[in-house]
Length: 363
Ligand code: URA
Ligand code: ZN
Image (cartoon, rainbow, N blue to C red):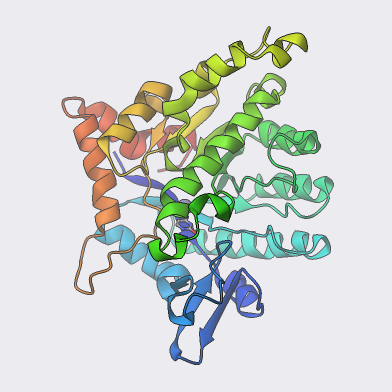
């Protein structure tokens, strides 16, 4: 059974060029203090002038854009196949009239990368979400004709108003029709104020460890509350980071819905699909949670046939110069073997079998 990584990113060369041409977030640049190394500044707040330029964002090297390095990382970690996706913030920041063409170029680039390594690479496409919905729908249609695409990666902002925006309905309809799943991935975290005035003493820990998963949890809860899955019963979504905190909080979410007078008054507590149904029918969870505790919550929420191994490469590299295997990857491998000890079949399914089946990979 192959090992398949469904959560692994790339910034293809055309995208890096785009970031190099910019000087507001997101951008890539070198600073006079360290002219030999470029930095990737993508997250809200990473640009804070109070942070020394040499620790803003993160260093960016070829592991972010050179596909040969992705393959070398896969070989080193015994990963047979990767389903690559553009990393955040995708094209969220582009002016509407530029987004359609940029998405095409990036998707064509990624299709070319996949074609170079038969059997080893598939992809989730990028959507031009700042463009009108018709342009987005066209790109979804086009992606369904390209050999290596198996879905699309999306952030939580949708067309600008979140994933509970009814204006997304034609896009959800197209994704459902062409059987392309949404890989839902965070980027914006939570408002900076929640991290407090000392946040920059803590590096990226609060936004990445907590802001990202809560952002995903809120986005998917809003989809559920607005009835997206009542309207699109076959719309499938793969949630990053084992669903943020959804598996842990699903019971609380359901209870709050059942006890909400406003929802009851508007007839919204009856004839609805509940979160447990959605978790077991429409949602897949990656296994990028680094511990047995989190993975068991994901398993209990969605089932062993809906969990999929991932790494988040090239993010979270080891900080030691001489490290070989990546701690982040080994933590995800260990969580799977601890969670499924005694059930080798389930472990193999999570490591790759589920991805082959769900994404129809020709391996
Ligand atoms: N940091 C990011 O900005 N994106 C990821 O996918 C992981 C870490
Ligand atoms: Zn990621």
